[in-house]
Length: 121
Image 1: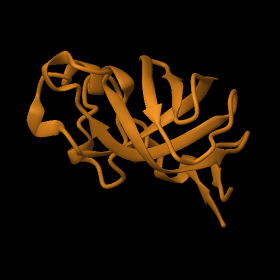
Image 2: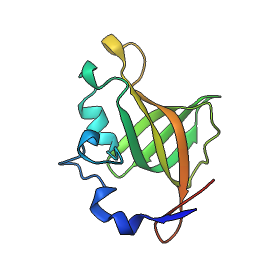
Image 3: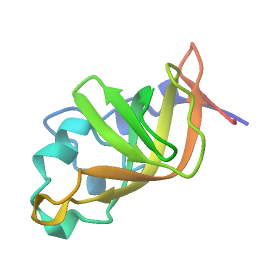
Image 4: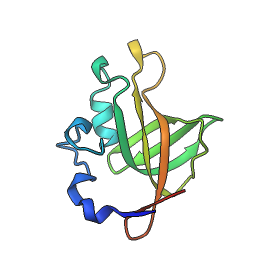
């Protein structure tokens, strides 16, 4: 199944100024928005989608993910590809009282092709 990202345009692309995932039907946001809301415990477990690349596999379940706005840890039971442009869907995992890192618990992911389409994995 192919879905062209460019057909959704601004609906899928979150900007730093309006990256609240609740304001778009796909819950697309940025790493910067998640980090800026780190101390908002009401955001814990919010559904989000981020577009970027896994830069490193740190351990069995921990990955580092980077988009145009920053880097965040991913906690994933699913193997993720390093260095490929992907969409990651999951839930925000707040670091309560700053114990542990701010993370996204990964529910699923998809490749993004050269022309911007989401490809089934």
